[in-house]
Image (cartoon, rainbow, N blue to C red):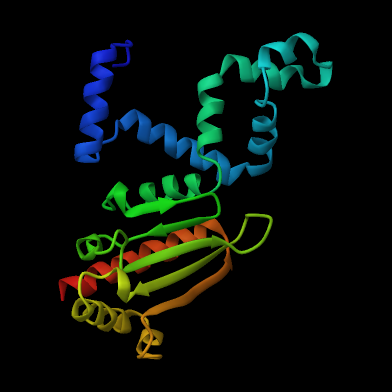
Length: 217
């Protein structure tokens, strides 16, 4: 596949979809990209800003001040493309998967400004095209440097109303606030507000472990 064999690429792509497998090399690249986003956010944004338009044309017409950026861009198009793909919540996804290796990749969904993660093992309760229990991550401010973590329960996404109540009972042992508003079909409990990425990842890891333990008891 790395030598450019088209047939091999098709087979590997099919296997990826069926088994949730990812190449170790790809995992390393994603983690490096996530680390760069987290450690040097301003520098990465600045570099990516030069990738708009045609770099070759800009190289011929640019001012001297931007020569080094454009040269790096032209020589490392694949790396810069990966940095673009892993902006925002995509970098959080890579960081979470690295922090919780046991988490299936399909247990995380995200868009530009939010990320939902189903705890390990809880995906078995998925009903109406989503998980009845999941963690939700959003930006706390416009700087996109701080995060809010919520734990959510949605009875309408469970397979049955009885199972939804069982899941809610599990959650009460983890977070007592789920025991209030018993007539509600949806609950979102704020666990952390305006925390840094390292704190967010640690909190998600701890919460995932607690939720896994609840299912085992």
